[in-house]
Length: 148
Image (cartoon, rainbow, N blue to C red; front, side, top):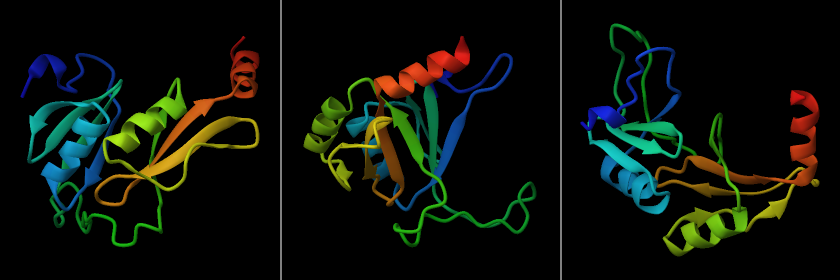
């Protein structure tokens, strides 16, 4: 593991997202190859630095002493979702074009969301949903208003 790039805080904390997957290699190729993440650890678990966040990819499994009664498994029905990654981008159309050309599967092209943002959704190899969105001026103005 490349320790200078590892999500090991000296203070505070890092936010990471753990994904239970069927095939670590296929998921690693998606998050590193298509989305441009940096592989920090290749497997068991696979750790990827993705922009300013971290993705941990590992196979499922049964309960452990620190999570009794909890089973980890990849999504069984890709149309029933209880969480998803949200990638905020500077240019949604450019990301859509680039990632689609690399093989990403999008549900639709980028669409306007009531003037707040332009967004689209794609799936990773296990069917996880990933939102790709670009803020509109309306949303930027709202953030400015509430942070001033």
